[in-house]
Image 1 (cartoon, rainbow, N blue to C red):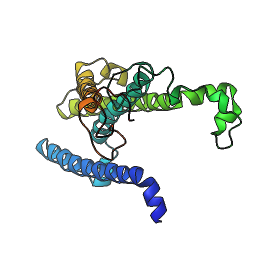
Image 2 (cartoon, rainbow, N blue to C red):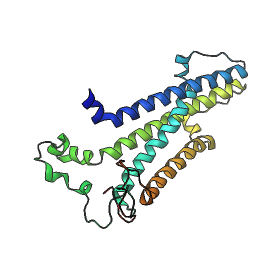
Image 3 (cartoon, rainbow, N blue to C red):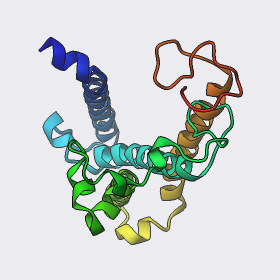
Image 4 (tube, rainbow, N blue to C red):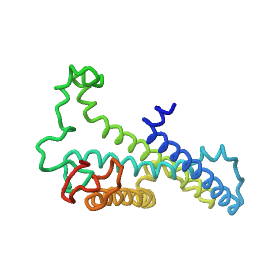
Length: 223
């Protein structure tokens, strides 16, 4: 058990933190939702039922989409662009980094992943599987944000006595939908920008996301 925790501690702690904050979001959202229901003289609901509401779906997917967009863009942009001195960039002075090696040269490597040994289309997809996974997750959460937002919008319309309801596609054309999305997108890219630039000048001893403390500011990559 100790070895498992040591080798997988980062993902375990991040997973636990994610679940804790998700439960916290759900709980606070539940109370906020019922407060709104009471203000509009509507029936309150149980917590388990709240998890299936558009209120919870929209708020959750609205944030997830920006996270996955951020990671997709970061993975793709760091493959082709450089930032001299940043721990988050490949070194522009090096002709080829380890991540740029042709995987076909390792087809006979014993511990190579199955797609590498298989080759062909499977390998081509595997070469870009990380960015493709983030892109798929982004589009999935983006659509679910729109679905939840449309349902939430229509519910508010009905509560205010209006029968003018809209479809998911119509909701995606509203300023409200893009305001919800863009306010999250800009914050994610600000965070990545700060990480790229600050890692040029600042250090965090022991972190894989930092250069060595004694590294020159001009040194690029994690060293």
